[in-house]
Image 1 (cartoon, one colour):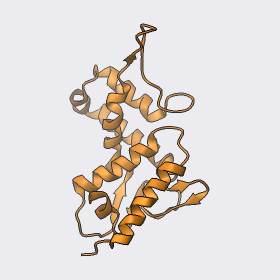
Image 2: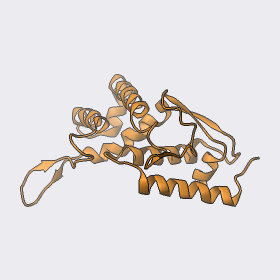
Image 3: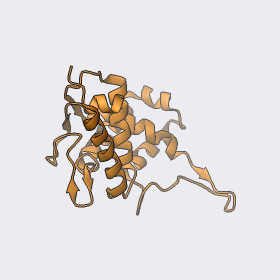
Image 4: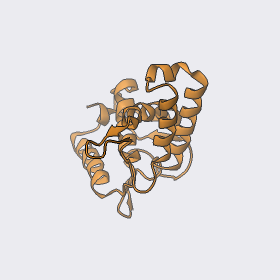
Length: 172
């Protein structure tokens, strides 16, 4: 068993904090990705400390779940209209828009959305593709510095190999 030393665990926490403090955020994708990695570690990981290979397909469903409730229109009392809260700079982020489309189709029922197997699979595939294009290769950037503490930062692809100790650190 290769459990990270206390010093390494503190470095991990400091790196997460640095990304949150210094990372460029134009949408909520990076927050969702950190949360998805942590949830994956808790739900599927172990305490061995070993590296783990993870595909964007493995975390796309989590993104859908996170954004599902965020696409519910919010009613503004003073204006009397309901609209979805804006999640980023400019137009709505593409993942949010895709989730919104399926959300509308099934009248907001997440379980009904999952029963629409083709629609769910298509949405998951599109979300996985967006994760690979957007936050996956930008997550570990703080300012102008790349902090490859979660996985090797090579800037392309749909699969990452979480470094030794990352799953353990998210779980503990």
